[in-house]
Length: 368
Ligand code: UD1
Ligand code: UDP
Image (cartoon, rainbow, N blue to C red; front, side, top):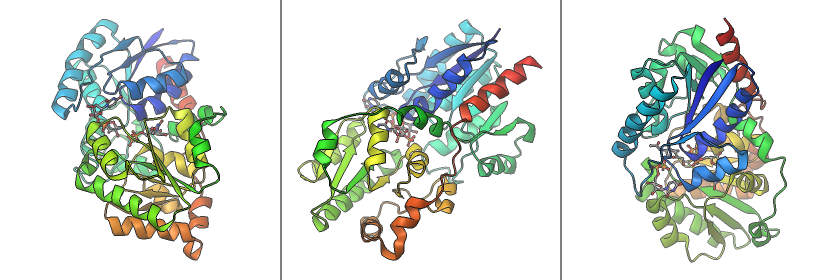
């Protein structure tokens, strides 16, 4: 029996790792240990509840307005004890958060092999997204298995001289998660509030957008609602107080905008499906919305998901108020059929079987 420790700590990692946990649990020769850092608290628990995953360890490190020093150092130290106790044969981490980086570093220090799910995403700008581009590059240096979601991600790794034999193209496990969530019908007063209106779904939380960029985004949304009194905007606001304060101040009194607490993925994915289009600086939503045929205006200057831009479903608009507003107007007016083209593009992120592929690869490697 081989032991695989699956580590994650934030909402998006949980959404994309729970399908991997489930797929590994089906393997007879693998014992799966789930360890969460607790970098997120409520937002993590929402996902664990939906996917019915109960971690064996929760390092519970979150504190209010935490900084990068706190997250990285506390995870590194606490992870040491867990890894030394469990002595796993393999540690799996996901993506690019500080949980990902600190856990991979702890594994490296203790000489435990690392598998990296969602490997190879790059903007090639170390400051954007910050600190995620650094985190994911750091993991690529130590990973024994690189599970790249797309061909492009594989090419990014090859450019950094990562050994080709360690790279497997699997698709993105975000699409696997959608298969679970979108199969469950949900009801919510939010849908009553939307009624028959055109609804725009908004999310924003990135560190590099804190402060003025976030405020520009919120002012753009405010102006858009004034131009189109018939639209409604739903914004599940991230729990970060730095985000909540700006959102409440600028959008709190706008009757066309509904600010709600973070939603569990069942409700959130149902909202994507109900939306007209999505405004977001999120990473994961750039993968999910195309799969649900919704155009996405990406509130960032660069993206590590150019496949969605090439497919025609994502459009980078940055954080300038006028640019965001003009792009949203073009979608509202369907100028030159831009809405139709974006909505009908083909999702480039996989077929929903990435987790099974990852479990098969690990199982096979153990049997050699
Ligand atoms: C983190 C990740 C980011 C990822 C995002 C997903 C890092 C450095 N950042 O950023 O890559 O895109 O998660 O959402 O790894 N909070 C709560 N309850 C929660 C979660 C957060 O109260 O359940 C509040 C706390 O005050 C916390 C703050 O939000 O200090 C920020 O959380 P943090 O994980 O540091 O940053 P995120 O912006 O969430
Ligand atoms: N999400 C959710 N509830 C919300 C907002 C987002 O379940 O209220 C999901 C979303 O579907 C996606 C993930 O959270 O799977 C994205 O997380 P986030 O934007 O926080 O992080 P990122 O992907 O940018 O790292």
